[in-house]
Length: 595
Image 1 (tube, rainbow, N blue to C red):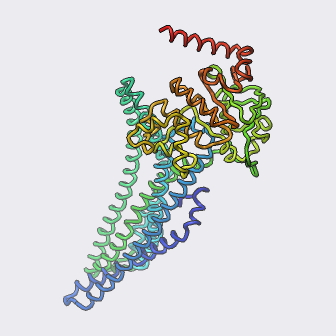
Image 2: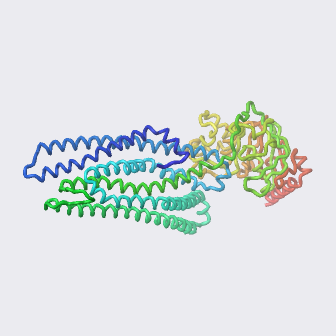
Image 3: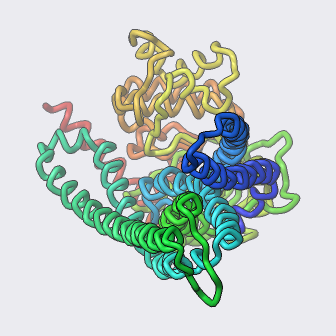
């Protein structure tokens, strides 16, 4: 069996299917062990001078009845056991997906997308394979071999003792190899992760590779990763083949032993000589030898299955261990019990001596932030690269655990707020401008795809992307491609803005979301923010001070600390960083005008 705390509950959930399938499988095993005695009877009939046609007819009818039962039984165990294994695979994948959504963002800094996808595909398929075929082989290896062994012992126990040692060797060989093969399978999966990671990263950055004419370099790098994966797979396959061949060799030698010794005993019996074996007289006819060989033939499959089970169990166990490690990953950001759920949110934000350090970082990214953003205010956030601007807005989404009593929304400590409720009142256009591979309409309406189309158009007009969309062949039904590959940087930024505005949340955050658009389009978007977002809180991170120069307040960050938080005019008087940014950008405009 394949056991684990994330797997055991599914045995109970789908236990009825496993029980029905196992019952059908055991019944088939019992039924097919009656076939050797009919072979004995047929050989006996044909060894006589006169052939009894009626007896043969009767045997044929009985054999047909047995095969009909086997046919129905095999259909039943296929329908039940395979159904259960695939349902378990589906449920575990669903559980893993929910876990992936709950894990903190830093988890994906340490684990690449390719590695995580390997757990969802290759590893989970190995587990499903063992739950399906592995269960069937395990039941066959146990029940069929035991039933056959009992019948062989009751039929000719002396002959059964002769083949007991080779069968025991197969069991011992399987136990020796199981742990070693589990270790080798985990090594194989790790190299597969590396191959998956490299491929995913290469395909994502294919435009950069082409732009720098680095196809050959990437091909050589890929060949090294692929060669490593090949070598590990070949080693694992070699071990698997050697293990299987040794089992088949033992089976072949055992069959030769039966035929050789059994044939000699039949010759002695026909010659009228007495055979004393293990202190008992043995009588063995040709028909008896055929029946015994038929019993052994039935035992060959369980012995082969035992070898396959060891290999399959090794793979599944290694894969399940990787899945369990993923599911056991601590969920650092958890939803508080009975957390506050926002009702009629106003959008007031308060920082009280707030400091923040990323997990595993060695310094603070925000230090002693104390300020209040009142409902309806438009606040611009500026500062040099690395000053903490993106971190300032990220903490509002509760992507990380924060110190209690330092950050409040509408007077409620966000560490004590219901996380889904908190995030529902914030509309966020992130800096990376992520676009899903879907229609533009569904990208804009991501927060509520069931909304009316008029709302989508309104959001597109707000972001000044409506005219661009109308020029596309399929307009709003245009497929953006993976990560918006068919769109320009400015178009992706504006679709992100439209998606955030579509949510119509009381807190609206744009993280450097107009840096790739021209000045005219930027002015249009800023005008829409002023007109359409009146009375609602808006925070805009900007790399150009001109973007936020008309806002109610400017927050100037320097090395994670507040250098100034006031109106644009006052910031110009008290903030050296703001003064420098204004001066440099004014000088830049003058130089451009001179050209």
